[in-house]
Length: 183
Image 1 (tube, rainbow, N blue to C red):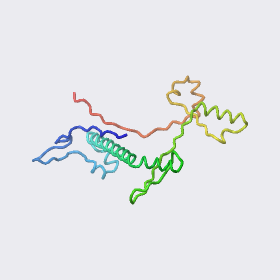
Image 2: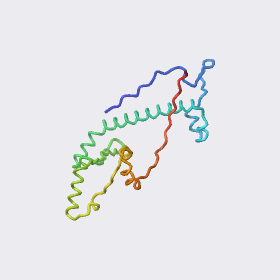
Image 3: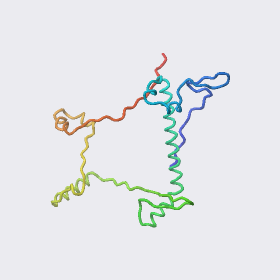
Image 4: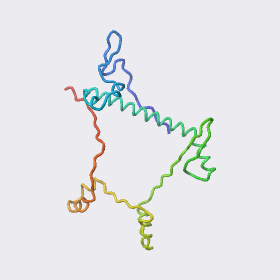
């Protein structure tokens, strides 16, 4: 399904961080090209307004790159989806890789299989195997998950039983810069 182009604000002749001198637009801010040449310490010393503008530009580039990637994916699917489905049918399969010739190229079209398991039915199947005297661990792996929101809502005595099995790690930090109101 084609993705609509992201909405862009109308271009202004003078962008934030730029000024015009004798008809020439000049910049008094850090550009992405300059940022590419910096190391982390140099970038960390940039003024906050430069960092905010750079974050905005990078966000726009990411959105544009995602839009372009989606557009190309949709174009490839429009061009090769039907021939790939026909090639899979000819090979007697619904999913997997097939190869399609297109001029001087060989297109590898992959339709991965994504299995989903009904947890209660899976638990019943595991119980059946165990009732036969088989070790279910020979056939399935079991992972018990505890949502953090539930863990923090438990009474302390229940949490205490589970805490030895719990390890807390951190993810990648993120930062946003929001301009304060000039009140």
